[in-house]
Image (tube, rainbow, N blue to C red; front, side, top):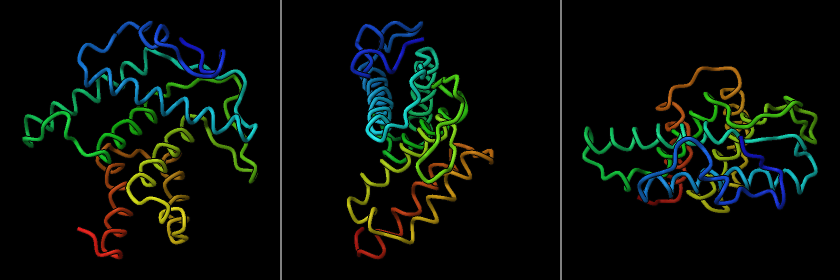
Length: 190
């Protein structure tokens, strides 16, 4: 396992390649780096709020497993939907990554929960999944997503679903698709 909090908080290339699986294609390597980048951004944002548990570690084997499963799903889209592996929609990639983070739990901490300022407690992997969910919607919709107050309840429903429901990959992808499609309809975009 590699530590997320050592040094400057970012995983080094040595740590990225220290797992039992080293990404062997440019697309797999890009997916691996993207997932590690998302985790490091998540850790940095929590450090800024001074709520990141100091004992968090990342299981590199699980990250590699997520990359393998993402590559398998990309292959599925390529074979059965005639979509190039590098052209799979971002919401589908994010949904798959979120699903496997929720399932495999790559972050570990002795202090199982982290406390948010509002007093809510979240498992660190659930909160990482929610962070990726939020980042994906912000990438879709830009700053208007942050200003859309009607999505606040939707966001709360998402974290509840991540914690207490068994969601298949496709359901998570649809959770990401709904606000984006609504945004496109209300803003006249195709």
